[in-house]
Length: 330
Image 1 (cartoon, rainbow, N blue to C red):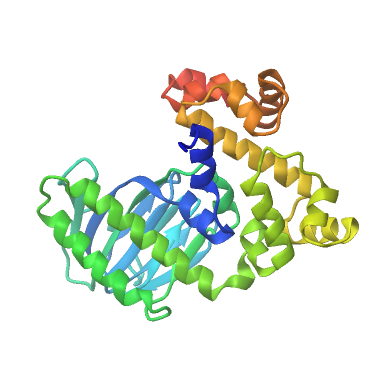
Image 2: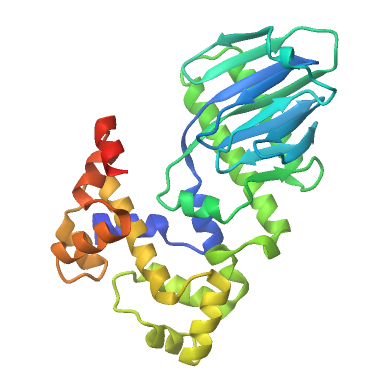
């Protein structure tokens, strides 16, 4: 039997917490830059979308706005998951004038090369922007460290990442037909692999629903919510499903996830609604029915209360409404 559009959206979102996190962090468009920088050098980067850096040779310093600094060496991979402003520079004392003398060569819409001549240590790295497609991406990013760093040799995947980065550098040096799409997919694979390595080695640092897989009962409850988001769940019915008392379940869920069961249920429904509205093929009445609301108007009221705008306005914005409309909605 053919799946409904809503079921397709839910199925794309439904998995275990880690799969959901990685799926929401798939990138639709990524840029790629191959840089060869001779010290001293300095590259200021404005905040905005998430960034990634992979150092292939040499070393550099990642200085975040606010003072946090990270030393990166050959084989290190860093993801700035929330896209905060920062500066990348040579590790030696770097004068303010080191930002000059950088040549930039655009090889495609999303592929470029940077180079700075000089007699100092040469650092080679690849970097770029990432645009995540999942509606839950912002929520996932809020549960992860601002700088997710993977050290060379820390995980077995690093050798694989290095080989992938070499392939990206080769492909971008003489880009042919389809090069940008190919490189964008390689970036996505690198990001997911780095995320997998970090999650596997830092389970105690996972918070919210990402950490729920550590508790079988709470993880099962979240899986039930994700699998049947339109069911009339309440604290008692979920507690019964996982064989816990109502009070113990409620307390344990809040302690582990960081919000109450009903708050989580409502927010998850809104994330699914965002996906459906962005997809554009599902009417408001069908979305309302599948998410457990009695009517399209009831859903619209709940959506506006949660998002600060009507479902129709969000759908228009997702289709590329004028900037003025976005500013007004914000």
